[in-house]
Image 1 (cartoon, rainbow, N blue to C red):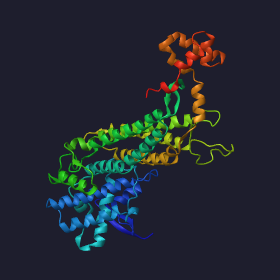
Image 2 (image 1 turned 60 degrees about the vertical axis):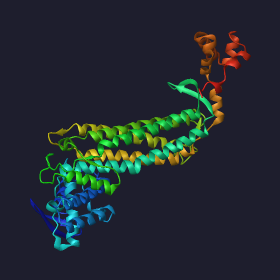
Image 3 (image 1 turned 180 degrees about the horizontal axis):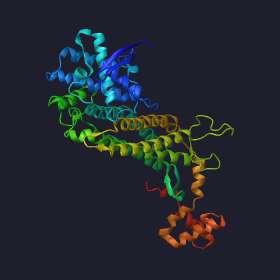
Image 4 (image 1 turned 30 degrees about the horizontal axis):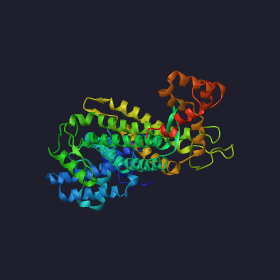
Length: 456
């Protein structure tokens, strides 16, 4: 492989000749060959937006030549368009401040400018990183990436799934079925009412996620090394935030306390807590659906779900609730990521937290998995659910808990005696009531009407 010599403050480094990155990126590649996890694309996108905004802010504040600012902005746009995707190869498992990734961006931008405009002589630190530190750029990029990914991917996926559940509720609002608590028979409800609970689980969690974005809108940029803003313009942070708002069409502000923004990950902890709540709710919905669809003959069998693929390599004709299983596995991963983020956030020592790359990698993985699995679950399962009305009616009529409607008329203990008698003798509630001479069949039929027990 053909190489070239790049240098940094520590000396010379051999770099692949066809790459735009420089010495510090190469040192990171050489020294951190750990795992397969690379810095997420969304972080690189956020950094490109941030570097563009920083250049324009420095131009507007009289710190950077307008031509150089325009060149930086041009290369950042190339990065955002995907023209340099192979130039950001660094591992998540690097310095805890993310300095290597910040310098990766700085070097690529500077070297690309020097290729396009050799007379400008862009420098990674002095030019592209002007007024910045990895300590404030990486936390800012984390917040930008988190908000953009949630707004672009997760919130729409939640909305689409909620619409599907709303439509499913309407279609099934008049089907009365057996309720279950403690996995035991309970009083009736409609299938539409049951689905309305799932609908609200998605909507409530979506609202929580959206609310949790507000603290993430505060950016650390302008804090530089320790929060004092050394080597930058006093208005740099606010100017950057305004420019990022304009570039992304979503609101960002300069953090009110930069000492807090460098050392705390509380906004990400809070936002991921909302992601975990969504994961918990999806776990509940998926488990409900696969229980209600269990069978087809030995289970509850009240729902019919799409038959997407064969379920067994040995049992012919078997079909499994695979979309539900994917949802529950994603939920477990998100819950695990929440633990990672919580522990990382507790490690803000003195003026800096040095668990930044692992935090944003875990956070964005949760957003990505939740977004993807919601779309898959919606299109491959929820949209194809139908009611097995024959099984629903059979289970409802066989339920002993219909006896609950008798309690106001004959009392709890007599109603319980009817239920126990029916169960012990394997007879119907009507037959048990008559056998005990508590109600005749006509009186029983007048009091037991499942359609009137669902509270509509």
